[in-house]
Amino acid sequence: MSVLSEVDLAHALEPLRPDLLRFARLQLRNDHWAEDVVSETILAILEKPAAFAGQSALKTYVIGILKHKIVDYLRGARREVQVAVDEGESDSEAFDTLFLADGHWRDPPPDWGNPESSFARVEFFEVLQVCLDRLPPAIGRIFMMREWLELDTEEICKELEISSSNCWVMLYRARMRLRDCLQLNWFGETPSP
Amino acid sequence: MKLLGTCKDMHRLVAESLDHELPWYVRARLRLHLSACDACTHFSRQMLWLRRAMRRLDGS
Image 1: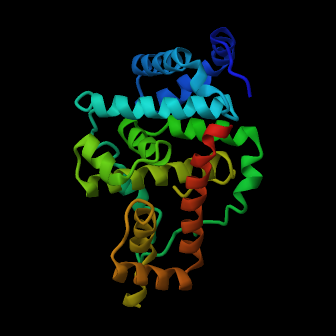
Image 2 (image 1 turned 90 degrees about the horizontal axis):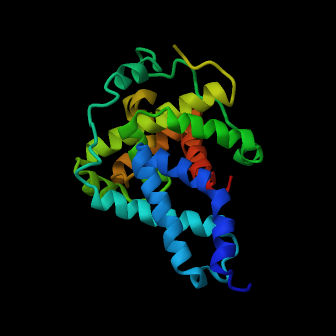
């Protein structure tokens, strides 16, 4: 694969900007920071067009760089990315109602079947994006750090300066909310009240 | 049956197991519960399903 000229690369990158912004917003929960990080990502790539030569998919390569920039950003902006640990306190009550007094599920979780059937449809990822957007900011941030940036919980706890147990609780809440959101908006059944 | 644990207790461990390694005796108890509980087995699959979906988010 030949090296793209800087001009070609700039043309190729522009259509990706909305997607990059979307991911950056999901992670950082702040439009201003998201804009900064995306601009830095694009600039970094344009500064070294030769670094892209041979990569099979521009989008994958660009998102890889974006993720690194976001991780660096989160590490540098530690004090600014405050995590409200008590966010979603009402969740504990909401999740309690999923169970009967004897500890059994009120509504046993159904089988969601083969994921590939859902992933084959573009609408699925649109629904997933909306569900991610709906997470409370601090919970959404932690969840994205864990499942999108794929950081270890140890590192996340260290970066955010919260205890492991707080980390785990927030991730639990994120997973439960997402599960609920997908159940309702993708699989089409109403969740338990 | 106390050994098997309740779904309410066990489902949290299922979620947590995605984020850190559980002590071996907790893992054993969880496995025992899952072997006897379809509901929690489905829940466990849902959690892994979600993780897989997140891995594929970039490719959409």
